[in-house]
Length: 110
Length: 115
Image (cartoon, rainbow over all chains, first blue to last red; front, side, top):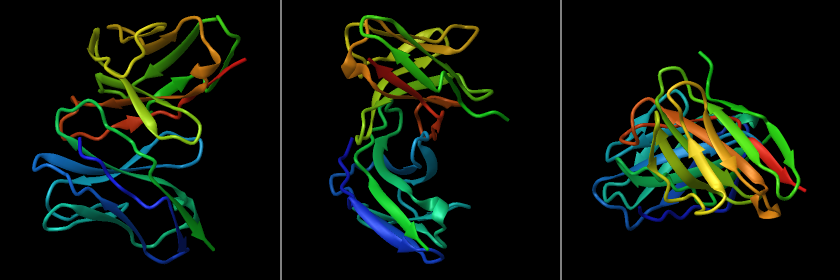
């Protein structure tokens, strides 16, 4: 699976959009981009995933660049409860090992 | 619709004892995954099971660790003769189908502390 690079930490003001970047320059054509988050002391929570096209659901939007070497997770209106570690993962379908890196620690401030 | 249930939430064992961690997947899910998270680190894959079968145990330590997912009942992660280095949070996840284009649902984890 391709390796990902994320900033260690980010801050965001409550009510503003949080844009979390992820670099995956070695991604292969059949690898998906997944985003999960982990709120302190809880299990990871699925947010969104995509292959080529941008995706949006009730939680977030995922913007994948045309060359697929990077992506951005957007939380449109961050709340204090969005404070968590956000993991960007790339993996091949049918691969059992979803590899979590260090992630980005997002802190939403009042 | 209950999510992935793990118990116990906290488990304390002395060195040399056995630890048994249980995981009940979401209703309708027949695929279970176990992950371990050391303090201040990311999650590391351990094992993937389907009912009565171990599909991939490439992340499982070769000794003292075992996992099962019987036809009836929860999945069990068993650690024999625990050592201090086994202290970690152990998370279970389940999915409806296999690890294709499928999201995983995680439990709240079991925090194992070895004294």
